Image 1 (cartoon, one colour):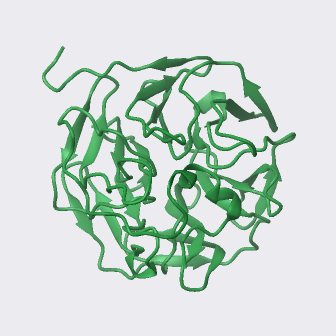
Image 2 (tube, one colour):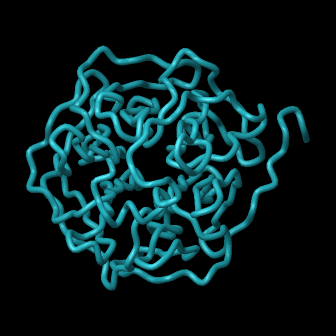
Image 3 (cartoon, one colour):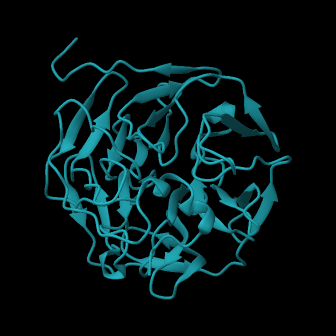
Length: 336
């Protein structure tokens, strides 16, 4: 059974692959020591303690047999990309989750998959990055799932994980769990009426995460706020969007870029702020899905990397300052 559980999601960047499930080939070494290279399905997070954006995982290209990206952890300081780790950590994978644990000053990685088809290749491991090295937790994972989502909850002081597709049961999960650094624990709560492709968006130190997800009819991008006990819907006039890259941008609210609008890939930027969705008139990256976005709180900019269209897999870096996009001409390591 394919881990792609939604017909709508299958019309996104998966459409570039021939019909039928397949297993990806082993990861390649990086193309360059100065760039993560083309990739889609990767994870991006801002490391507040080190004040850098971190990137892990993904795939190198479109189409059947696309190789996994390398197993390096990449770091971006606003000027250049460099490898923060070279081995000794998680194996190469796509669709992993990254979240920064502000209480413990560590980056947490959970899950992902090393195969497009085989349920046994879905990862159920938990890792932590302390700024110098990876360490794997011996604790059991929360159960096989892919396309789950993760963010830090400042009110609980723990990392939350929501949902994902269970490849063995062949259905979407809507459970909520927390990670305290030693174990995953289920939080009893009524699930929101989500459909597919959930994204937990962590916010500032006073606000709980937001959950973005396509509604069950797959017509709108819905938003839900976590109270610590249950979910409540927020956001008037939601866009029709799936698989956009999302991040909290401080006073600029939640920003979502790209994805599938029901007809084609889009290059639109949407903002959820003060209880309403609005489209931002700003030209920037080309239309794509499977990109990743993270807010660099130290510099006040959202950083976007990579993604894929029907014909290309991108290796570009962009920044959004709340009003406009700017392409980043990264400096090689050792450059000025």
